[in-house]
Length: 454
Image 1 (spheres, rainbow, N blue to C red):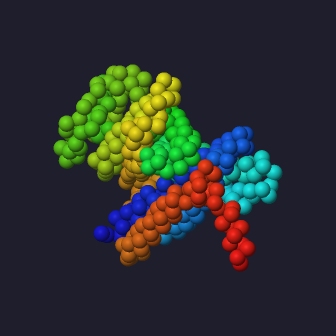
Image 2 (cartoon, helix red, strand yellow):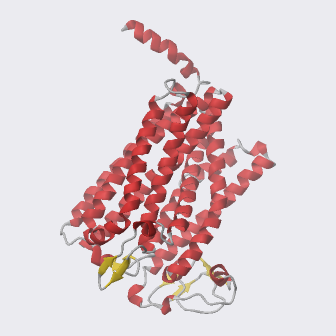
Image 3 (cartoon, one colour):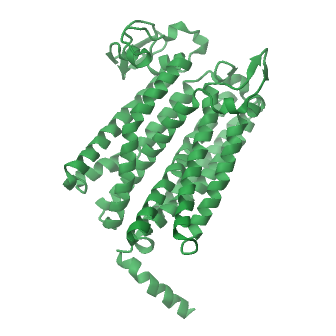
């Protein structure tokens, strides 16, 4: 593995892990705040226990996300110093604001975790909501920085010199809205289905069924609403990509040759050497319609662009196909869930129905990772689209491959630790969080006895 490949692999690995931690950090506080609101309105102790259980999960993932995010910030300077030298002054504002949002999130989470029975109940609830709002702001700001790499704005570039820098215009670039909307919905879809699936699994195991049933309802409704909205944001994103990065769209569809009635393709095996897509299902005119609003107008093929500017077509195409396939599948599950709510309530707790959600646990995150592959790999060979090539931005420092191995070990360790802690939290639901569990009811007496014995 040469240093350039090692640098790119390290960044891909780091982003792949961090995006999961970040999505949970953005979404789980809203689940927590909603269950807390239900407790304050109904007085149902199950909602209080659910809020506390989810808040502990938020704290675990917040700490992990802080570690992985800090590592990423170091990696930007370590692996891509030329990029940061030129780009830092231009798109530094969203990163600075993201740091502010992170501190607000940390303070609000501390208030929420230790504020039970100490603050006004509605102020306490608001601190939990603020955790979610701050996490959401962090996500939007980071995506704005990434969108700038896809749609550079806020500066003049003449003879290799960056001048007339406008950080506001850079942050609010042409790509930020479509990318932020698509990313936020993806976060709610992936985290919502993962959480719903875990609670469905606990229901199937007949453990604290009433507790997990309420958790399943909250997370499943949120995930299914987001999944049904996601195709709309996907259409907005695709139209934006077609306008700004037509070569990326061509790679997503493995569309090599410009032609009228351009088809939308499903599946297929990419033969980049012969510039063909084999065994694909082609729906004539649909890509033309989605891009231009009519079925006849051609969509530019890869042959319209210099081959040196082509992204890795096969990787981009397969990732795109995986993303949309899983997105359609999750939409189908969402429609089934809402049909069950509307007409077939008896399905909701049946084994086959719950198993569908257990099966869906990883699907949202797989689609999320595939979407980021499309975004990042599809931009290649540029780190700043149309201005700076990735190979020109990499560090000249030798031995990056060893850094790759070290960072890989750290992220794998983090993932293992998080998995263990979350598993332990699930096992402790009955004792710590579910007021209907006999073990929970024994706790006050046990604690009192222990205090007396001491």
